Amino acid sequence: MVQHSNPSLATNLCGITLRNPVVLAAGTCGYVDEMADVLDLSRIGAIVTKSITAEKRDGNRPARILDAPAGMLNAIGLANKGLEAFLRDEVPRAAASPAVIIGSVAGNSIADYVRIASAFDASPHLRAIELNVSCPNTADGLIFGDDPASLRSLLAEVRPAVTRSTLIVKLGPNASSIVKLAAAAVEGGADALTLINTFTALAIDVHTRRPRLSNGTAGYSGPGIHPIAVRMVHDVYRNVASEAGVPLIGLGGVMRWEDAAEFILAGATAVGMGTALFVDPRLPLKVVHGLERWVDKQGCRNISELTGCVMM
Image (spheres, rainbow, N blue to C red):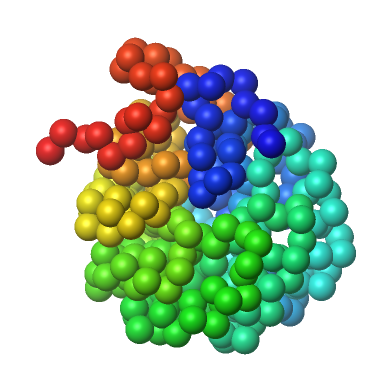
């Protein structure tokens, strides 16, 4: 059982107790505990690992990250050491983590997703599995995050392979209807949803007339996408998640506690932070502190009382 410092922020994510609802997002904080040098991991809720593929990936060639107005562009390309090395070198460290560790899965095919999810499910150190079906800077897996029917096909194979862990599906904003995609994920057996991933974007060097990043397109994240992410979380909560009892992890541009509080009111149970870690890796602690004061001022015993409580 994970111990939490303030009962008002204790968060139940599909039966997993988080000390607070703040989650460090996949791809922004290393494999397991690399952020421990600059951030007290005993004061956050959970960490999502770098997305792991079946085989080692070097990712896209430089340049692959770029400052952008109100955020950043990245086209890392899912660089990682591959499943075998991850299980051997990184997962054992998760046993000592004071935060819950969630394993992120990416793949080229349904077979890849099943293989990795099964391996993660067998590890007692990974409490949940997040399927990344929405990475916009590589073609791998993106089709599953674009089309509800394809997502159902993926989950039809992955869900039976995950028998111990909580299964989270991470959705992106680039599909024609995130509500329909969320409904497909829930129908396919998702225990929880993370939304949203980055927006597909493009930056052009006006002097060379070429894309500024090697991959051409990239994922746009940061505070510039936050209001759109809040709307999408609310849409999914209102139309899918609330009735189904499926918790949401709201993700997109959280820099301040007020941003996190917006996600909670829109319908999120937990809140992811990613781009903020590049600005100041201590920002999650400021968000936690702000949420504690907010819950108290709202007259609530626990932050869950505020989930979905926006008055429209």
